[in-house]
Image (cartoon, rainbow, N blue to C red; front, side, top):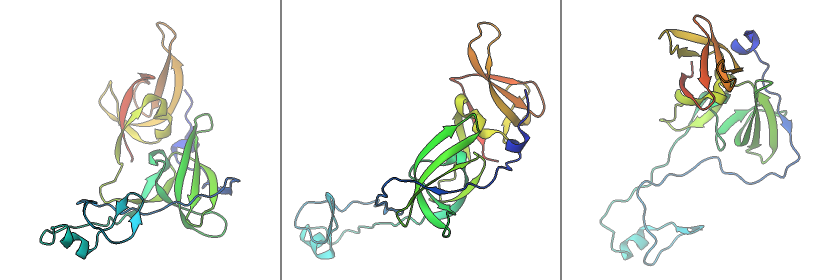
Length: 218
């Protein structure tokens, strides 16, 4: 099995963002997480947000809860470098289209395994829709909650190719080895399709296409 050195060393060029022809939609980049609900019964005041009402202090007192303590906690996402292989639809990432850097929300992700890239569609904070192809190991700054690290994940065998260049515990030897390449293969007994992982040291690892393996983003 050949080794994809360009992919292993993560030397793919930076994504080139290009505009799409779709109409931009209004998308919010930040969320308010309410951990203690205020309810909707009784006389309420304040603006409506869909089916939810924001209760003022006077309304709470009229509901008989003036002596109780209610709190709404605003989460504060912070930029966290994240590999493309770990991004999800709905994530907010920093992109560099023509015209300057800006924050954008991911609207779609499409795998292109033959070319070893992931196709990313985003809508910027200015309402513009753009797209780019990026290597799975390319990093974007992502707005993340403090507990959203995504460092260790369970990966399906059909997605092993996104983790070339990282390390795994070899299932046969127990050694920590680098993944050099991932290719489709055929089982020697019945010729069914399986997945083959070439590693830096040790024998090739074979997996069923329905198998899973834990990877660390290293």
